[in-house]
Length: 596
Image (cartoon, rainbow, N blue to C red; front, side):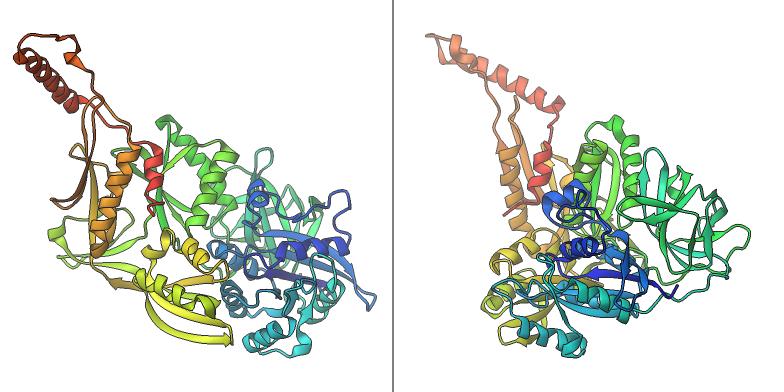
Protein backbone atom coordinates (compact mmCIF):
# COMPACT_ATOMS: atom_id res chain seq x y z
CA UNK A 1 0.00 0.00 0.00
CA UNK A 2 2.92 2.35 0.54
CA UNK A 3 3.36 2.45 -3.25
CA UNK A 4 -0.12 3.87 -3.92
CA UNK A 5 -0.87 7.58 -4.29
CA UNK A 6 -4.43 8.92 -4.70
CA UNK A 7 -4.70 12.52 -5.87
CA UNK A 8 -7.03 14.87 -7.73
CA UNK A 9 -6.47 17.99 -9.82
CA UNK A 10 -8.35 21.11 -8.72
CA UNK A 11 -8.40 24.57 -10.34
CA UNK A 12 -10.57 27.38 -11.63
CA UNK A 13 -12.30 26.79 -14.98
CA UNK A 14 -9.90 26.93 -17.97
CA UNK A 15 -6.64 26.82 -16.03
CA UNK A 16 -5.46 23.67 -17.80
CA UNK A 17 -6.47 20.71 -15.58
CA UNK A 18 -7.45 18.34 -18.38
CA UNK A 19 -4.40 19.25 -20.49
CA UNK A 20 -2.10 18.53 -17.55
CA UNK A 21 -3.90 15.21 -17.02
CA UNK A 22 -3.14 14.39 -20.71
CA UNK A 23 0.57 15.07 -20.14
CA UNK A 24 0.67 12.89 -17.00
CA UNK A 25 -0.99 10.01 -18.88
CA UNK A 26 1.40 10.46 -21.78
CA UNK A 27 4.48 10.61 -19.54
CA UNK A 28 3.52 7.42 -17.68
CA UNK A 29 2.63 5.60 -20.96
CA UNK A 30 -0.93 4.97 -19.71
CA UNK A 31 -2.35 6.05 -23.06
CA UNK A 32 -0.87 4.78 -26.29
CA UNK A 33 0.01 7.32 -29.00
CA UNK A 34 -2.80 5.97 -31.13
CA UNK A 35 -5.45 6.75 -28.48
CA UNK A 36 -3.99 10.12 -27.57
CA UNK A 37 -6.13 13.17 -28.25
CA UNK A 38 -6.53 16.53 -26.52
CA UNK A 39 -8.48 16.24 -23.22
CA UNK A 40 -8.48 12.48 -23.49
CA UNK A 41 -10.44 12.06 -20.23
CA UNK A 42 -13.32 14.28 -21.38
CA UNK A 43 -15.15 11.49 -23.15
CA UNK A 44 -18.60 13.09 -23.32
CA UNK A 45 -19.48 14.73 -26.63
CA UNK A 46 -20.82 17.78 -24.75
CA UNK A 47 -17.54 18.24 -22.88
CA UNK A 48 -15.59 18.33 -26.13
CA UNK A 49 -18.02 20.78 -27.74
CA UNK A 50 -18.08 23.25 -24.85
CA UNK A 51 -14.43 22.72 -23.90
CA UNK A 52 -15.26 22.21 -20.22
CA UNK A 53 -15.08 19.23 -17.87
CA UNK A 54 -18.53 18.23 -16.60
CA UNK A 55 -17.73 14.89 -14.92
CA UNK A 56 -14.90 13.82 -12.65
CA UNK A 57 -12.82 11.12 -14.37
CA UNK A 58 -10.76 8.50 -12.56
CA UNK A 59 -7.77 6.75 -14.16
CA UNK A 60 -4.85 4.70 -12.87
CA UNK A 61 -1.22 5.29 -13.91
CA UNK A 62 2.00 3.39 -13.17
CA UNK A 63 5.16 5.37 -12.60
CA UNK A 64 8.73 4.37 -11.89
CA UNK A 65 10.21 7.03 -9.61
CA UNK A 66 13.82 8.19 -9.47
CA UNK A 67 14.35 6.08 -6.34
CA UNK A 68 13.77 2.98 -8.49
CA UNK A 69 10.43 2.02 -6.89
CA UNK A 70 7.29 1.39 -8.95
CA UNK A 71 4.25 3.46 -7.87
CA UNK A 72 0.54 3.27 -8.67
CA UNK A 73 -1.00 6.74 -9.09
CA UNK A 74 -4.78 7.08 -9.04
CA UNK A 75 -5.77 10.40 -10.60
CA UNK A 76 -9.20 12.02 -10.53
CA UNK A 77 -9.59 14.97 -12.92
CA UNK A 78 -12.30 17.36 -11.70
CA UNK A 79 -14.48 20.11 -13.26
CA UNK A 80 -13.72 23.78 -12.59
CA UNK A 81 -17.10 25.46 -12.99
CA UNK A 82 -18.98 26.52 -9.85
CA UNK A 83 -22.07 24.52 -10.98
CA UNK A 84 -20.15 21.25 -10.73
CA UNK A 85 -18.55 21.82 -7.32
CA UNK A 86 -20.33 18.70 -5.97
CA UNK A 87 -18.28 16.57 -8.38
CA UNK A 88 -15.14 18.18 -6.92
CA UNK A 89 -16.23 17.49 -3.32
CA UNK A 90 -16.72 13.78 -4.17
CA UNK A 91 -13.31 13.52 -5.82
CA UNK A 92 -11.70 15.16 -2.79
CA UNK A 93 -13.42 12.70 -0.42
CA UNK A 94 -11.61 9.80 -2.07
CA UNK A 95 -8.06 11.27 -2.22
CA UNK A 96 -5.11 12.07 0.08
CA UNK A 97 -3.62 14.87 -1.99
CA UNK A 98 -4.45 17.49 -4.60
CA UNK A 99 -2.60 19.35 -7.33
CA UNK A 100 -3.76 22.97 -7.13
CA UNK A 101 -3.30 24.39 -10.63
CA UNK A 102 -3.03 28.16 -11.07
CA UNK A 103 -2.84 29.80 -14.50
CA UNK A 104 0.31 31.95 -14.63
CA UNK A 105 -1.41 34.40 -17.01
CA UNK A 106 -4.55 34.87 -14.89
CA UNK A 107 -3.47 34.34 -11.28
CA UNK A 108 -5.68 33.11 -8.47
CA UNK A 109 -9.41 33.23 -9.17
CA UNK A 110 -12.58 32.63 -7.18
CA UNK A 111 -13.01 28.93 -7.88
CA UNK A 112 -9.31 28.31 -7.10
CA UNK A 113 -9.96 29.57 -3.58
CA UNK A 114 -13.22 27.70 -2.99
CA UNK A 115 -11.81 24.39 -4.29
CA UNK A 116 -8.73 24.90 -2.11
CA UNK A 117 -10.90 25.35 0.99
CA UNK A 118 -12.80 22.16 0.09
CA UNK A 119 -9.48 20.27 -0.08
CA UNK A 120 -8.13 21.79 3.15
CA UNK A 121 -11.39 20.90 4.90
CA UNK A 122 -10.63 17.24 4.09
CA UNK A 123 -6.97 17.50 5.26
CA UNK A 124 -5.51 16.94 1.80
CA UNK A 125 -1.84 17.55 1.04
CA UNK A 126 -1.73 20.46 -1.45
CA UNK A 127 0.89 20.69 -4.20
CA UNK A 128 0.72 24.15 -5.84
CA UNK A 129 1.48 24.10 -9.59
CA UNK A 130 1.88 27.12 -11.89
CA UNK A 131 0.66 26.27 -15.38
CA UNK A 132 1.08 28.03 -18.77
CA UNK A 133 4.56 29.39 -18.01
CA UNK A 134 5.36 29.19 -21.76
CA UNK A 135 2.83 31.95 -22.54
CA UNK A 136 4.09 35.46 -23.28
CA UNK A 137 1.62 36.94 -20.79
CA UNK A 138 2.79 34.70 -17.91
CA UNK A 139 3.45 36.60 -14.67
CA UNK A 140 5.35 33.86 -12.85
CA UNK A 141 6.75 35.86 -9.92
CA UNK A 142 3.57 37.81 -9.24
CA UNK A 143 1.41 34.68 -9.26
CA UNK A 144 3.91 32.88 -7.02
CA UNK A 145 3.47 35.72 -4.48
CA UNK A 146 -0.32 35.25 -4.66
CA UNK A 147 0.00 31.48 -4.07
CA UNK A 148 2.35 31.98 -1.10
CA UNK A 149 -0.12 34.48 0.43
CA UNK A 150 -3.01 32.09 -0.11
CA UNK A 151 -1.53 28.79 1.08
CA UNK A 152 1.33 29.96 3.25
CA UNK A 153 3.83 27.62 1.56
CA UNK A 154 7.47 28.27 0.63
CA UNK A 155 8.49 29.59 -2.80
CA UNK A 156 10.45 26.37 -3.44
CA UNK A 157 7.29 24.27 -2.96
CA UNK A 158 5.61 25.81 -6.01
CA UNK A 159 6.18 23.80 -9.18
CA UNK A 160 6.20 25.44 -12.61
CA UNK A 161 5.03 23.64 -15.72
CA UNK A 162 3.49 24.04 -19.12
CA UNK A 163 0.79 21.43 -19.72
CA UNK A 164 0.77 22.23 -23.45
CA UNK A 165 4.47 21.59 -24.09
CA UNK A 166 5.07 19.08 -21.25
CA UNK A 167 7.73 21.13 -19.43
CA UNK A 168 7.92 20.31 -15.71
CA UNK A 169 5.70 17.18 -15.80
CA UNK A 170 8.50 14.96 -14.45
CA UNK A 171 8.90 17.24 -11.39
CA UNK A 172 5.14 17.06 -10.73
CA UNK A 173 5.19 13.23 -10.76
CA UNK A 174 8.16 13.19 -8.39
CA UNK A 175 6.37 15.66 -6.06
CA UNK A 176 3.25 13.45 -6.04
CA UNK A 177 5.35 10.45 -4.95
CA UNK A 178 7.32 12.38 -2.33
CA UNK A 179 4.78 14.78 -0.84
CA UNK A 180 1.40 13.05 -0.98
CA UNK A 181 1.01 10.53 1.86
CA UNK A 182 0.28 6.87 1.13
CA UNK A 183 -3.31 5.83 1.88
CA UNK A 184 -4.05 4.74 5.43
CA UNK A 185 -6.04 1.57 5.88
CA UNK A 186 -5.76 -2.08 6.86
CA UNK A 187 -6.00 -4.93 4.34
CA UNK A 188 -6.97 -7.46 7.03
CA UNK A 189 -9.93 -5.56 8.50
CA UNK A 190 -13.54 -6.03 7.23
CA UNK A 191 -14.16 -4.49 3.80
CA UNK A 192 -15.09 -0.80 3.66
CA UNK A 193 -15.24 0.86 0.22
CA UNK A 194 -16.67 4.29 -0.61
CA UNK A 195 -18.72 4.66 -3.82
CA UNK A 196 -17.76 8.01 -5.36
CA UNK A 197 -19.37 7.64 -8.79
CA UNK A 198 -21.45 5.30 -10.93
CA UNK A 199 -22.43 4.97 -14.55
CA UNK A 200 -25.13 3.06 -16.45
CA UNK A 201 -24.15 0.57 -19.13
CA UNK A 202 -27.00 -0.82 -21.20
CA UNK A 203 -25.31 -4.26 -21.50
CA UNK A 204 -23.81 -4.77 -18.05
CA UNK A 205 -26.12 -2.81 -15.74
CA UNK A 206 -24.79 -0.27 -13.29
CA UNK A 207 -21.03 0.08 -12.84
CA UNK A 208 -20.01 1.61 -9.50
CA UNK A 209 -16.60 3.28 -8.96
CA UNK A 210 -15.22 2.94 -5.44
CA UNK A 211 -12.19 3.63 -3.26
CA UNK A 212 -11.27 0.87 -0.78
CA UNK A 213 -10.65 2.34 2.69
CA UNK A 214 -10.13 -0.94 4.61
CA UNK A 215 -10.04 -4.64 3.75
CA UNK A 216 -9.86 -6.36 0.35
CA UNK A 217 -12.54 -6.95 -2.27
CA UNK A 218 -12.27 -10.18 -4.30
CA UNK A 219 -13.87 -11.23 -7.55
CA UNK A 220 -16.96 -13.41 -7.11
CA UNK A 221 -17.54 -12.65 -3.43
CA UNK A 222 -20.93 -11.56 -2.09
CA UNK A 223 -20.98 -7.83 -1.29
CA UNK A 224 -23.52 -5.68 0.49
CA UNK A 225 -24.39 -2.00 0.06
CA UNK A 226 -24.38 -0.70 3.62
CA UNK A 227 -27.10 1.99 3.50
CA UNK A 228 -29.18 0.39 0.75
CA UNK A 229 -29.05 -3.05 2.41
CA UNK A 230 -29.03 -4.86 -0.97
CA UNK A 231 -26.66 -7.78 -1.72
CA UNK A 232 -24.95 -8.67 -4.99
CA UNK A 233 -22.18 -10.85 -6.36
CA UNK A 234 -19.02 -9.04 -7.46
CA UNK A 235 -19.09 -10.51 -11.01
CA UNK A 236 -16.18 -8.37 -12.14
CA UNK A 237 -13.88 -5.98 -10.31
CA UNK A 238 -10.95 -4.08 -11.71
CA UNK A 239 -9.06 -0.83 -12.00
CA UNK A 240 -9.72 2.10 -14.32
CA UNK A 241 -7.18 2.53 -17.05
CA UNK A 242 -8.33 4.30 -20.22
CA UNK A 243 -10.61 1.29 -20.53
CA UNK A 244 -11.61 -1.01 -17.66
CA UNK A 245 -8.95 -3.50 -16.65
CA UNK A 246 -10.23 -6.53 -14.65
CA UNK A 247 -8.40 -7.78 -11.51
CA UNK A 248 -8.93 -10.67 -9.08
CA UNK A 249 -8.70 -8.51 -5.96
CA UNK A 250 -8.40 -4.86 -4.99
CA UNK A 251 -6.83 -4.00 -1.66
CA UNK A 252 -7.11 -1.10 0.79
CA UNK A 253 -6.03 2.28 -0.58
CA UNK A 254 -6.77 1.48 -4.21
CA UNK A 255 -9.49 2.77 -6.55
CA UNK A 256 -11.52 0.47 -8.79
CA UNK A 257 -14.89 -0.45 -10.29
CA UNK A 258 -17.42 -3.20 -9.60
CA UNK A 259 -19.92 -4.79 -12.01
CA UNK A 260 -22.56 -6.95 -10.37
CA UNK A 261 -25.48 -6.83 -12.80
CA UNK A 262 -27.39 -4.20 -10.81
CA UNK A 263 -30.42 -3.09 -12.80
CA UNK A 264 -32.17 -0.87 -10.24
CA UNK A 265 -30.62 2.57 -9.97
CA UNK A 266 -32.08 3.10 -6.47
CA UNK A 267 -29.73 0.38 -5.12
CA UNK A 268 -26.58 2.37 -5.89
CA UNK A 269 -26.25 5.61 -3.99
CA UNK A 270 -23.15 7.74 -4.40
CA UNK A 271 -21.54 8.02 -0.96
CA UNK A 272 -22.71 4.56 0.15
CA UNK A 273 -20.29 2.00 1.60
CA UNK A 274 -19.65 -1.43 0.02
CA UNK A 275 -18.90 -4.17 2.54
CA UNK A 276 -18.60 -7.97 2.50
CA UNK A 277 -21.61 -10.14 3.35
CA UNK A 278 -19.53 -12.65 5.35
CA UNK A 279 -17.47 -10.09 7.34
CA UNK A 280 -19.46 -6.86 7.28
CA UNK A 281 -18.04 -3.63 8.71
CA UNK A 282 -19.80 -2.13 11.72
CA UNK A 283 -20.14 1.47 10.46
CA UNK A 284 -20.45 3.23 7.12
CA UNK A 285 -17.75 5.65 5.94
CA UNK A 286 -18.57 9.14 7.20
CA UNK A 287 -17.79 12.56 5.76
CA UNK A 288 -19.86 12.48 2.59
CA UNK A 289 -22.05 15.54 2.25
CA UNK A 290 -25.57 15.65 0.83
CA UNK A 291 -26.08 17.82 -2.24
CA UNK A 292 -27.98 21.11 -1.81
CA UNK A 293 -29.73 22.13 -5.05
CA UNK A 294 -29.84 25.89 -5.65
CA UNK A 295 -32.12 26.29 -8.67
CA UNK A 296 -35.42 24.52 -9.31
CA UNK A 297 -37.23 24.12 -12.61
CA UNK A 298 -39.95 21.86 -13.98
CA UNK A 299 -39.10 19.40 -16.77
CA UNK A 300 -42.10 18.24 -18.78
CA UNK A 301 -42.18 15.81 -21.73
CA UNK A 302 -43.36 17.39 -24.99
CA UNK A 303 -45.59 14.34 -25.55
CA UNK A 304 -47.48 13.40 -22.39
CA UNK A 305 -47.06 9.67 -23.26
CA UNK A 306 -43.30 10.03 -22.66
CA UNK A 307 -43.74 10.66 -18.91
CA UNK A 308 -42.48 7.17 -17.89
CA UNK A 309 -39.59 7.34 -20.37
CA UNK A 310 -38.55 10.68 -18.86
CA UNK A 311 -38.44 9.10 -15.41
CA UNK A 312 -36.25 6.23 -16.64
CA UNK A 313 -33.94 8.71 -18.37
CA UNK A 314 -33.66 10.85 -15.22
CA UNK A 315 -32.91 7.72 -13.17
CA UNK A 316 -30.03 6.77 -15.47
CA UNK A 317 -28.75 10.35 -15.48
CA UNK A 318 -28.89 10.44 -11.69
CA UNK A 319 -26.36 7.58 -11.53
CA UNK A 320 -23.90 9.63 -13.49
CA UNK A 321 -24.73 12.99 -11.91
CA UNK A 322 -25.52 12.71 -8.21
CA UNK A 323 -26.13 16.45 -7.85
CA UNK A 324 -29.46 16.22 -9.72
CA UNK A 325 -32.62 15.84 -7.61
CA UNK A 326 -36.17 15.38 -8.86
CA UNK A 327 -39.74 14.71 -7.73
CA UNK A 328 -43.02 14.37 -9.68
CA UNK A 329 -45.30 17.39 -10.14
CA UNK A 330 -48.13 18.39 -12.43
CA UNK A 331 -49.12 21.63 -14.12
CA UNK A 332 -52.44 22.70 -15.64
CA UNK A 333 -50.76 23.95 -18.80
CA UNK A 334 -48.16 21.23 -19.28
CA UNK A 335 -49.58 18.06 -17.72
CA UNK A 336 -47.36 15.68 -15.72
CA UNK A 337 -43.64 16.23 -15.29
CA UNK A 338 -40.84 16.51 -12.73
CA UNK A 339 -39.62 19.24 -10.44
CA UNK A 340 -35.84 19.10 -10.70
CA UNK A 341 -33.19 20.66 -8.48
CA UNK A 342 -29.96 21.86 -10.11
CA UNK A 343 -26.77 23.47 -8.81
CA UNK A 344 -27.01 26.36 -11.28
CA UNK A 345 -28.15 27.41 -14.74
CA UNK A 346 -25.24 25.80 -16.60
CA UNK A 347 -25.99 22.54 -14.80
CA UNK A 348 -29.63 22.81 -15.92
CA UNK A 349 -28.61 23.46 -19.52
CA UNK A 350 -26.25 20.47 -19.49
CA UNK A 351 -28.94 18.14 -18.06
CA UNK A 352 -31.42 19.27 -20.72
CA UNK A 353 -28.84 18.73 -23.47
CA UNK A 354 -27.83 15.30 -22.11
CA UNK A 355 -31.47 14.16 -21.93
CA UNK A 356 -31.83 15.05 -25.59
CA UNK A 357 -28.55 13.53 -26.77
CA UNK A 358 -28.25 10.41 -24.65
CA UNK A 359 -31.93 9.43 -24.28
CA UNK A 360 -33.58 11.30 -27.18
CA UNK A 361 -35.95 13.04 -24.73
CA UNK A 362 -37.40 16.38 -25.80
CA UNK A 363 -38.45 18.34 -22.73
CA UNK A 364 -40.11 21.67 -21.94
CA UNK A 365 -38.40 23.54 -19.11
CA UNK A 366 -40.31 26.02 -16.95
CA UNK A 367 -38.89 29.24 -15.54
CA UNK A 368 -36.10 28.39 -13.06
CA UNK A 369 -36.58 29.65 -9.52
CA UNK A 370 -35.22 29.07 -6.03
CA UNK A 371 -36.95 27.65 -2.95
CA UNK A 372 -38.61 30.10 -0.56
CA UNK A 373 -39.48 29.67 3.11
CA UNK A 374 -43.04 30.74 3.94
CA UNK A 375 -44.39 31.29 7.45
CA UNK A 376 -48.19 31.17 7.55
CA UNK A 377 -50.43 33.09 9.98
CA UNK A 378 -50.77 29.84 12.02
CA UNK A 379 -46.98 29.94 12.58
CA UNK A 380 -46.24 26.94 10.32
CA UNK A 381 -43.12 26.98 8.13
CA UNK A 382 -43.09 25.44 4.67
CA UNK A 383 -40.65 25.47 1.76
CA UNK A 384 -42.07 26.17 -1.67
CA UNK A 385 -40.23 25.46 -4.92
CA UNK A 386 -43.06 26.51 -7.15
CA UNK A 387 -45.00 29.83 -7.18
CA UNK A 388 -48.27 27.92 -7.59
CA UNK A 389 -47.67 26.34 -4.15
CA UNK A 390 -47.80 29.73 -2.43
CA UNK A 391 -50.75 30.06 0.01
CA UNK A 392 -53.28 32.88 -0.43
CA UNK A 393 -51.82 36.31 0.53
CA UNK A 394 -54.09 36.67 3.58
CA UNK A 395 -52.61 33.47 5.10
CA UNK A 396 -48.98 34.51 4.58
CA UNK A 397 -47.21 36.04 7.56
CA UNK A 398 -43.68 36.16 6.12
CA UNK A 399 -41.80 35.08 2.99
CA UNK A 400 -38.05 34.50 3.27
CA UNK A 401 -35.69 33.95 0.36
CA UNK A 402 -32.26 32.29 0.29
CA UNK A 403 -29.26 34.62 0.49
CA UNK A 404 -25.71 33.89 -0.65
CA UNK A 405 -22.28 35.29 0.02
CA UNK A 406 -20.91 36.10 -3.43
CA UNK A 407 -17.16 36.39 -3.88
CA UNK A 408 -16.01 38.22 -7.00
CA UNK A 409 -12.35 38.62 -7.97
CA UNK A 410 -11.74 41.20 -10.69
CA UNK A 411 -9.20 43.63 -12.11
CA UNK A 412 -9.38 47.07 -10.48
CA UNK A 413 -10.32 48.68 -13.85
CA UNK A 414 -13.71 46.96 -13.74
CA UNK A 415 -14.41 47.37 -10.02
CA UNK A 416 -16.97 50.19 -10.50
CA UNK A 417 -18.99 48.20 -13.06
CA UNK A 418 -18.94 45.06 -10.89
CA UNK A 419 -20.10 47.07 -7.86
CA UNK A 420 -22.96 48.61 -9.85
CA UNK A 421 -24.07 45.21 -11.16
CA UNK A 422 -24.12 43.68 -7.66
CA UNK A 423 -25.97 46.66 -6.12
CA UNK A 424 -28.56 46.57 -8.95
CA UNK A 425 -29.11 42.94 -8.04
CA UNK A 426 -29.97 43.98 -4.43
CA UNK A 427 -26.46 43.12 -3.19
CA UNK A 428 -24.97 44.54 0.01
CA UNK A 429 -21.21 45.09 -0.01
CA UNK A 430 -19.53 43.29 2.90
CA UNK A 431 -15.85 43.99 2.27
CA UNK A 432 -13.21 44.39 -0.40
CA UNK A 433 -9.56 43.40 -0.27
CA UNK A 434 -6.79 44.09 -2.73
CA UNK A 435 -4.99 40.82 -3.51
CA UNK A 436 -2.39 42.66 -5.59
CA UNK A 437 -2.17 46.24 -6.85
CA UNK A 438 -4.47 45.52 -9.79
CA UNK A 439 -6.66 42.65 -8.50
CA UNK A 440 -9.38 43.06 -5.94
CA UNK A 441 -11.73 40.66 -4.17
CA UNK A 442 -15.22 41.93 -3.26
CA UNK A 443 -17.75 40.11 -1.09
CA UNK A 444 -21.46 40.78 -1.40
CA UNK A 445 -24.49 39.39 0.36
CA UNK A 446 -27.29 39.08 -2.16
CA UNK A 447 -30.45 37.05 -2.88
CA UNK A 448 -29.86 33.80 -4.76
CA UNK A 449 -32.84 34.51 -7.04
CA UNK A 450 -31.02 37.56 -8.48
CA UNK A 451 -28.03 35.56 -9.74
CA UNK A 452 -30.04 32.65 -11.15
CA UNK A 453 -30.81 34.19 -14.55
CA UNK A 454 -28.12 36.22 -16.19
CA UNK A 455 -25.75 37.42 -13.47
CA UNK A 456 -22.80 35.29 -14.56
CA UNK A 457 -23.11 36.34 -18.23
CA UNK A 458 -23.37 40.03 -17.34
CA UNK A 459 -20.40 39.79 -14.97
CA UNK A 460 -18.27 38.25 -17.70
CA UNK A 461 -19.28 40.85 -20.30
CA UNK A 462 -18.71 43.94 -18.12
CA UNK A 463 -15.30 42.67 -17.00
CA UNK A 464 -14.29 41.42 -20.50
CA UNK A 465 -14.03 37.90 -19.13
CA UNK A 466 -11.59 38.76 -16.32
CA UNK A 467 -13.89 38.59 -13.28
CA UNK A 468 -14.37 35.26 -11.58
CA UNK A 469 -17.27 34.38 -9.34
CA UNK A 470 -18.06 31.92 -6.57
CA UNK A 471 -20.82 31.73 -3.98
CA UNK A 472 -22.23 29.74 -1.07
CA UNK A 473 -25.57 29.89 0.71
CA UNK A 474 -25.80 31.69 4.05
CA UNK A 475 -29.43 31.06 5.03
CA UNK A 476 -32.86 32.66 4.57
CA UNK A 477 -33.83 36.30 5.09
CA UNK A 478 -37.23 38.07 5.05
CA UNK A 479 -38.05 39.73 1.75
CA UNK A 480 -40.79 41.76 0.10
CA UNK A 481 -41.92 39.33 -2.58
CA UNK A 482 -45.08 39.14 -4.63
CA UNK A 483 -46.48 36.47 -6.92
CA UNK A 484 -46.72 37.62 -10.52
CA UNK A 485 -49.29 35.75 -12.62
CA UNK A 486 -49.54 35.80 -16.41
CA UNK A 487 -53.10 35.49 -17.71
CA UNK A 488 -54.05 34.53 -21.26
CA UNK A 489 -57.68 35.45 -21.95
CA UNK A 490 -58.22 35.63 -18.20
CA UNK A 491 -56.81 32.13 -17.57
CA UNK A 492 -53.58 31.97 -15.48
CA UNK A 493 -50.69 30.02 -17.08
CA UNK A 494 -49.09 28.45 -14.00
CA UNK A 495 -45.88 27.56 -15.82
CA UNK A 496 -45.17 31.27 -16.43
CA UNK A 497 -45.98 32.57 -12.94
CA UNK A 498 -43.06 33.67 -10.78
CA UNK A 499 -42.24 35.02 -7.33
CA UNK A 500 -40.52 38.35 -7.73
CA UNK A 501 -39.24 41.24 -5.64
CA UNK A 502 -42.13 43.69 -5.25
CA UNK A 503 -40.28 46.77 -6.63
CA UNK A 504 -39.24 44.88 -9.79
CA UNK A 505 -42.65 43.33 -10.46
CA UNK A 506 -44.13 46.13 -12.62
CA UNK A 507 -41.17 46.29 -15.03
CA UNK A 508 -40.88 42.53 -15.23
CA UNK A 509 -44.63 42.11 -15.88
CA UNK A 510 -44.60 44.72 -18.64
CA UNK A 511 -41.58 43.12 -20.37
CA UNK A 512 -43.15 39.67 -20.08
CA UNK A 513 -46.37 40.83 -21.78
CA UNK A 514 -44.44 42.52 -24.60
CA UNK A 515 -42.29 39.43 -25.14
CA UNK A 516 -45.27 37.07 -25.17
CA UNK A 517 -47.08 39.32 -27.65
CA UNK A 518 -44.23 38.72 -30.12
CA UNK A 519 -44.12 34.97 -29.51
CA UNK A 520 -47.73 33.80 -29.25
CA UNK A 521 -49.09 33.06 -32.74
CA UNK A 522 -52.22 34.98 -33.83
CA UNK A 523 -55.54 33.16 -33.61
CA UNK A 524 -58.99 33.80 -35.10
CA UNK A 525 -59.84 35.82 -31.98
CA UNK A 526 -58.17 38.51 -29.85
CA UNK A 527 -55.86 37.18 -27.12
CA UNK A 528 -55.45 39.34 -24.02
CA UNK A 529 -52.09 38.89 -22.29
CA UNK A 530 -52.14 40.30 -18.77
CA UNK A 531 -49.69 40.42 -15.88
CA UNK A 532 -51.38 40.46 -12.47
CA UNK A 533 -50.41 40.64 -8.82
CA UNK A 534 -53.35 39.11 -6.95
CA UNK A 535 -56.47 40.72 -8.48
CA UNK A 536 -54.63 43.83 -9.71
CA UNK A 537 -53.70 43.90 -13.41
CA UNK A 538 -50.38 45.70 -13.82
CA UNK A 539 -49.74 45.30 -17.57
CA UNK A 540 -51.63 44.25 -20.66
CA UNK A 541 -50.97 43.53 -24.33
CA UNK A 542 -53.35 42.22 -26.99
CA UNK A 543 -52.55 39.83 -29.82
CA UNK A 544 -54.90 40.98 -32.56
CA UNK A 545 -57.15 38.48 -34.32
CA UNK A 546 -56.61 37.26 -37.85
CA UNK A 547 -59.66 38.68 -39.64
CA UNK A 548 -61.47 37.65 -42.74
CA UNK A 549 -62.87 40.59 -44.67
CA UNK A 550 -66.56 39.64 -44.49
CA UNK A 551 -67.67 42.95 -46.02
CA UNK A 552 -65.89 42.29 -49.31
CA UNK A 553 -69.08 40.96 -50.94
CA UNK A 554 -71.04 44.13 -49.98
CA UNK A 555 -70.93 46.56 -52.83
CA UNK A 556 -73.36 49.45 -52.69
CA UNK A 557 -76.49 49.43 -50.58
CA UNK A 558 -77.08 50.68 -47.09
CA UNK A 559 -74.38 50.87 -44.32
CA UNK A 560 -76.63 48.65 -42.16
CA UNK A 561 -75.85 45.68 -44.47
CA UNK A 562 -72.13 46.00 -43.66
CA UNK A 563 -72.84 46.49 -39.97
CA UNK A 564 -75.05 43.40 -39.90
CA UNK A 565 -72.21 41.25 -41.31
CA UNK A 566 -69.62 42.72 -38.89
CA UNK A 567 -71.93 42.10 -35.90
CA UNK A 568 -72.40 38.52 -37.04
CA UNK A 569 -68.60 38.09 -37.26
CA UNK A 570 -68.18 39.68 -33.80
CA UNK A 571 -70.56 37.11 -32.27
CA UNK A 572 -68.65 34.28 -33.89
CA UNK A 573 -65.33 35.64 -32.55
CA UNK A 574 -66.83 35.90 -29.07
CA UNK A 575 -68.02 32.28 -29.12
CA UNK A 576 -64.67 31.16 -30.54
CA UNK A 577 -62.89 32.91 -27.71
CA UNK A 578 -64.94 31.00 -25.14
CA UNK A 579 -64.11 27.58 -26.58
CA UNK A 580 -60.72 28.34 -28.17
CA UNK A 581 -57.54 27.61 -26.20
CA UNK A 582 -54.21 29.34 -26.62
CA UNK A 583 -51.11 27.23 -27.25
CA UNK A 584 -48.01 28.69 -25.58
CA UNK A 585 -44.91 27.78 -27.65
CA UNK A 586 -41.77 26.43 -25.93
CA UNK A 587 -39.87 29.53 -27.08
CA UNK A 588 -42.11 31.62 -24.81
CA UNK A 589 -40.95 29.72 -21.71
CA UNK A 590 -37.33 30.15 -22.72
CA UNK A 591 -37.77 33.81 -23.65
CA UNK A 592 -38.49 34.63 -20.03
CA UNK A 593 -34.88 33.71 -19.25
CA UNK A 594 -33.53 36.08 -21.88
CA UNK A 595 -35.63 39.11 -20.98
CA UNK A 596 -32.90 41.69 -21.59
